Length: 405
Image (cartoon, rainbow, N blue to C red; front, side, top):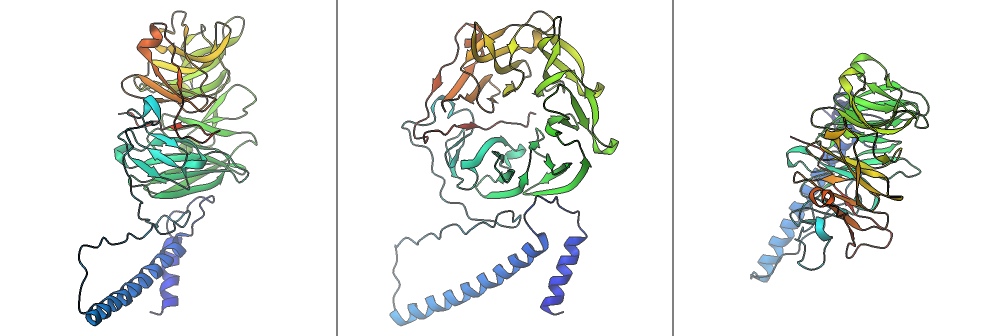
């Protein structure tokens, strides 16, 4: 078989596999062929190099011992290449001096152009970190999923492996949401909504459905994609591909913060008399029907927020005492009149909760805020802590542990 025939056979094999979504910038067959070409060239170069070393060694008649070898720099990563396997740079531990503040020992943080892990490792991510808007840990220590901030070209999705390799999965998508376990991703592309699986560093088995011009995916609830048909109006739809296009589920929800371990969605709904934003628990199994509703706290109609690991606490922006700030709401007491306890300055990004009941987020000035539930219940709101070494205008991005056992 000639080389041309071999290439054609490889392309036909990949063509028979499940098609990847259009935002992927890689041609799998071409990448496989290029990878084989690179391997052949590398083997040839290694052979030449070994021959040259042998010649020099014999000619000189001596060997220098004890000299440290020079480490080759990491090869250039081909964006979107699922087969690229770059060598990571050194990953030193954080110094004992000023660091990212009180959250350094509890949650992973994206700071400037690096990811700083809770155990003190610093992974240089020059392609991913500067544009990161939110990130979550993948189950089983498989790495991190990072969603980029919106640009004129759209959003991007990256997978960062535990040793620091950066892998681009999606580029040019309008909106991107990940399931809590990181195994599914949904995005808006043109006039369609797309749902696909995430396996390793690849997006697979994409399913599409046409949607209204303003419809966007906003999250996952249970086995369904949560869709906002019109962001200017209340209401959400659920998309389960096996049952057809997205189906309208409710017409009252203004914003959905996420789901609890029991599967109930935590939302802000329009309820009460007169109508006002109220916190509610919605049941995805019954088309987001309200299970419990509480109309005490004055929360914002949209915006960031996060639910504690045990599902009891909601941290979100609202108004208390005439001031705009982060409020802590007890979701187990919605049946009575719940209160929103002042917890700190307004939230300006993702909220990362730890199993111990502390929440971490960045404020509008780029400082890191650590909220302890026990102190908030005692009347003590959290104070922002500046992050040493962070460039002006940048904010730390706490990494959410989306997978909850």
